[in-house]
Image (cartoon, rainbow, N blue to C red):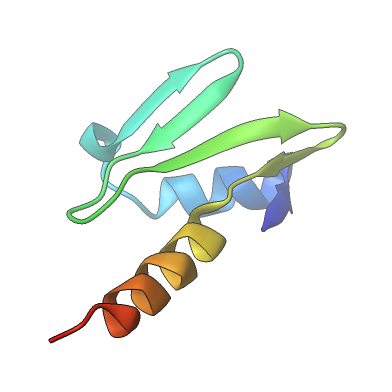
Length: 65
């Protein structure tokens, strides 16, 4: 998932300041289950968090019980 810099700024402003760690090449949003890493790609900021969450759900379902 990718967002414009403006859209990412709006999103980050909705979060608690303590959950955000920023460096020039990465923004990390801390979460209870898994951190989301946002990285610059051309003129957008992108994260693989939705895909990683989806893969984790499928892995959990595929585990033998």
